[in-house]
Amino acid sequence: MTENRMGTRQVELEVLRYNPETDQEPKFQRFTVPCVNEWCVLDALNYLKDNLDSTLSYRWSCHMQVCGSCGMMINGEPKLACKAMLRDYAGVIRVEPLSHFPIERDLVSVADDFMAKLKRVKPYLIPGEKRTLADGEYKQTPAQLERYKKYAMCINCMLCYAACPEYGLTPKFIGPAAISLAHRYNQDSRDGGRDERQEEIATSEGVWECTFVGACSDVCPKHVDPASALQQVKVASTVDWYLEHFMSWVKK
Amino acid sequence: MSRRPYVREVPRTTWFFKHPRYMRYMAREVTCIFIGIYTVILLVGLARLSEGPAQYEGFLEALRQPGSVLFHLLALAFSLYNTFTWFNVAPKALPVQVGDEHWPDSVVSGGHYVVWVGLSLFIRFWAGVL
Ligand code: SF4
Ligand code: FES
Image 1 (tube, helix red, strand yellow):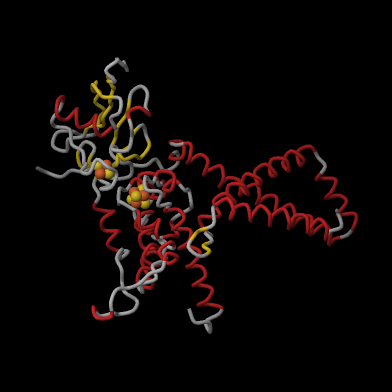
Image 2 (tube, protein in one colour):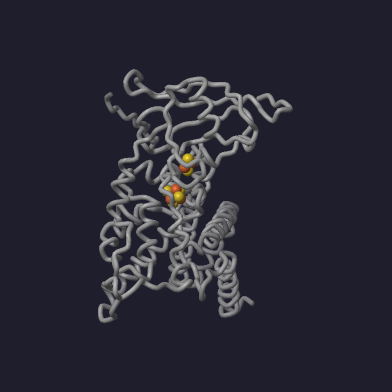
């Protein structure tokens, strides 16, 4: 890596390449990319694609950490390429598609599994109390908002899945983000869909697959803290079980 | 264009060497082995106690062997690690919201430490050691 007075430097990028039409398996390819110091890894990839190798495939859209599409492994850590600043890295930067997902091509991973799981947990409001337009809006106090706010910050970037060893070992695990989103709606004062979601998430493929490694919360770029959502779902499901088996006279 | 996704298998027995945070997790899990053995030793002690003073004295004698002392030191270190790691993540499982705000994590885990020390002192007091 060399740095000059123009605020640019040569960055060595080692990119995992895979072309499903010609390659038996992925392999690393090294590029030397002239970069501005203040660039992020996504800028370096964009330069690479525009000037050095137009066949490189990767996903991105917003370049501002909101669309969640540029997730990739950067030096072995799941990161948003638009949030990973070059100035924080020295030496060769190794870029791979997100761990635990199949590789579609180059840095593009197959997200189908996550999308199917999201759908299963019904991550939308299922109104508890039916209201007509004439009844006006659903009101919520700041305290009611606080109950679920951090879980509403998820951008579906799947970094937490790439970090979660349980998901890597047991792909049927519904996983951190989907369960956190289920919890987000369960915690919402306007929602009445908890029973439906519990059928998906209070199961052995759901929260009980989680062993609280906590890696999801370490890597989440939006501080959603999925590990906390999963533990809270475990606690609430356990309380449900006791109420049902030993105190069935108590109305939930 | 044909789709032919490439699947990278996760090594089933060595995955936790891949990242320090996985190693820390495994360390936390391994602590339970020591706590389990220690619990068995306690139960054996109770059984000896119920058999009479001579048997109990023999049990205490066995505890004084260097190997036993070493094990207890190890078990102490591991159970402290277990306690600290769990208390520090307790706020994730048991968040406390009062009014519009959640209590800071330090207050929730701090509460656990206070209760822990309080209970330990109480038990020692109750057992007449203090
Ligand atoms: S919980 Fe965090 S890491 Fe997981 S998908 Fe949502 S934003 Fe990404
Ligand atoms: S490009 Fe949208 S999150 Fe990075």
